[in-house]
Image (cartoon, rainbow, N blue to C red):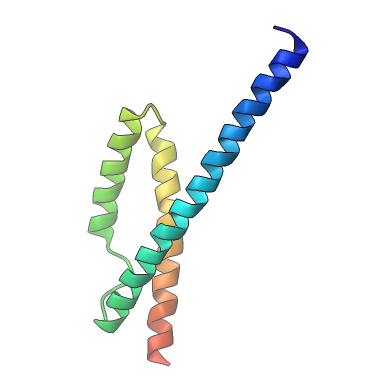
Length: 100
């Protein structure tokens, strides 16, 4: 493969990666819109920001999905825990705003 051909292939792959990254950002934004609504509902009904049972079920589900997609389940769990930590932070902020 010539250097020019390799560069063209690299450029195409990077373009695909850029498109996937953009889609991921938009999907995360949609996810956070939904979790904001959940946070509002929880605050209105004085429910806890965190739901450890649901989180455990989601981790198990996502690990299984990751395995089926040939993605490291540990990575999927780390990603989920990172997102959930941010969601809980948002829920706590929403609850605090209602208390003011």
